[in-house]
Structure formats: C-alpha cells, structure tokens
Image (cartoon, rainbow, N blue to C red; front, side):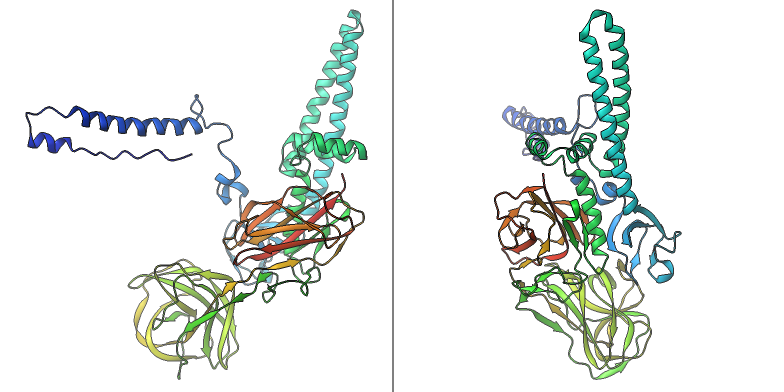
Length: 540
C-alpha cells in the first residue's frame, strides 16, 4: 500500500495579495491547490479504509506476525544456548538441558546462577518433554471428542428422519451431539494452543495419524499441505533449538526419521565433499573468503599499564564499508580478562560501542587476534576505532599516539565523557572479511527406517543479506545423490539470525532410498552463517 502523496503548496497567495491587493485571487491557482489537497485527502482515506473497519476498529487480518516486534510476538529475546561469561538482560531467552528459560534479572552468567540451579534469576518457560506429552494427550482427547460428536450427530440425524414420533428422541440425540462437540472444541483448543496452530489444524493433524494408507493419500489431496504439519512444526523448532545447545545432534521427528544438528561436532556434515566450506568457528558452517585485508597500529616499542580502561589508538581508524572479522592487540604479558570491540566517534568526547565487546584472553608474546563470534559491519560513513578494555592484569605494549580512553567496563551502549589526547596507548589491529565464496555443503548420509514420501527442512541461519531461494538454496535427497530444491521462508527472528523453514515437500519426483541428506548452496557472494539444520521425513 503506497503512502499518500504529500501536499506541498505551490502558489503563495499571501505574497500575491501583498503585491496586488486589488486583484482577485487567481481562480486557476486556487483550483490547483484545492485539487492537490483533494488528492492527498482521497489517498489518505483510501489507505485508511485498508486498515480500519466501518466501526472504527482495525480491519481483520491487518495485524500479522511480521508486523509485530520480537518482544510482542514471542515475549522474550532468543539468545540461543546458555553460555558462561555472557551478560544477559531481563527478558533474554536461552536453552539449557531439555528446557527453555527466560531471564528475570540481568546477570553475568556463571555456574552459580545457571538456569537449572538459580530460579530467582531464570524462569523455566518450557520443558520440552512435558510440552510434547501434553500436546499429544490433548490432540488425542480432541480426536476422541470429535468422534463422539460425529457419532451423536449421526444418531440425531437418523432419529429425526425415522418418523414423526421419534422427534423427541432426535432432539435428545442432537443435545448430546452439541455437548460432545463442545467437549471436542475445548480439547482441540487446548491442543491448538500447545502447537501454535488453529483448532482445525490440530484436529486435522491428529485425525490424519489414524487414517489408512489410502485414506492418507486422499487426505493429502483434500487438506492443504500447510494444515497437517503444524504440530510437527512446533516440535521441530524446539528440537532444533535443543540441538544447538548440545554437542551432539538430536534424532527425533516422525518415527525417528529426522535429525537436528547444531554442529557441536561435524559427524553429520560431509566436510570432505563440501565446496568452499569454513569450519574454523565452532558450531557454525560458513563460506571461505578470498581477498581478506588488515590494518592497524605500528608495532609498539614501549610498555604501559592501563587498568580498567577502554582505550584505543586514534592514530588510525577502521575502514568504512568493511566487515571486521578479527580484532588484535599487542602485549608481551598475558591478559585473562581483556575485551575488544569497535567504537564510533559521535563528537568530541562522545562515543558509541558498535555491536558488543567480546572477551579475549591474550597469551602474551606479541600480537594476538580475537576472531569475532559476530563480525562487525562498519557503516559507509562515520569514524570508527578498534579499542581494548584493559582489564586488571599486567602491562600492555604501547607507543605514543593520538588516543581515546575512559575508565569504564561497559560492553555496549554509549560512552560519554571520553578523554581525547596524545600519549601512550595500546596497539591494535583488525582483519577485514574478504569476499565470500559460493558454498556447497551437504550433510552426511542419515539412515531412515523406510522410504519416505515427503520431507521438510528448517534451519537457524544468519543470511548475511542473502536472499532465500534466489541466492541461498536448500535441497533434500532421500538417496544421498538425487536432490530436489525446497522453497524456504523466514518464520521468526533471533538475536543472532533467523529461523527459516520449508513446507512439507513431496519427494515422488526424485530417486527412492533410505539414505537422506540436506544440501545448502549459495549462488552469490553471501556471508552466510549456518548455525543449525534440521530435516524430517515421513510417509503419507
């Protein structure tokens, strides 16, 4: 829906009257101005009609999932698996063990305030095992109640048509049918709440599980492909979230014919058969790059102690438009509590931290670099510097240069009151990302218990600006060699990327087999990060 044309006055009637007070207003200019006002008002009313009903309320269907902020749509900020020495804020959501938790208090994570031992800091939101059992029980109750409703309704219909004298019996049967239907609605609603779908989708899914093979084929033709997989889709997302927090993959899905891999190890990735695959960062698959460059301070010749400071060398700045993948510093002494990051100079003495600082243990003996878990994209405009939080241990290598510093241990946000002068400062350097190569990576063979009729894929990825289905492609195979590409779409955003998923895809057009694989390819220079992948297979 296009925005209304803004009204901009073209004729200055006040000037005209001041210059020629006895001349009437020019009618053509008045008409032109009123016509322009009418265009803006008409377009505004037309747009308003698209979002507002006649009773003044929002039009049905106008507020959708993608129009809500993350905090409204899911109630917490997904941070992935709980990790030591991370600053969490109120509302952060993490996985730990078989449960999902929400932060009640801001905290620096330690083993003493771990989610499973500190309920004052972490609230358990969901126990995956309990949710699975409850959903299955509610779906079964929905099916049983619906069957009772159908039977009672049939009895009511038969009684009504048998004879006039059976009218009372028909009415009684109809009342019983209504009661059973109400019970079905309550049970179905409970199941729907647990799976995140509609009542109809909840009942259709459970009914489909009890159909014969022939009936399932008919159901596939009669029921939309997006209705049946709702419950499985809910379980799948939880399984993928769990897999990302483990060192080994999770085997689950229909009849165990699914695998969810967070790459804690590379057992289920065909590393040898991949093209342009980098596995240097644990728990991630990325494309390799070419043409990486670097920049930074000259190698220092002195030594100075900087305790509890955020300090940076202003004798050089980070290059605009580049992506920083590593930040390094020079020291002849080991440091265990340092941090590195990038800051933007907003004005004299005022800076903003870009992204967040990352912890770094420097081994001493010269230059050492921290590979950033989240590379930092430097905007095209502005002045940016690599900085170090000096921590509390030992001296740093230093040299005299323009510098900035402030006594602070902040890891994000603004830094007012920064001192800018010339003096000894920590020597820093950065490495910029090269151009990402086009990647092709597949899973290793995943054994199935039977030849599947359908499959689906879901994943946690940081798209890096790449476009799904035109630059980033997902495919499935049931024999490990013959693939069919699947269409994926974003489901929801996380702090470190997005969840993407395909619908259920028919596999009848590719070779049969029981050795499944997924494949991910890029057809452009996309800095894709693959954080977890899940695939599921089943029979109709």
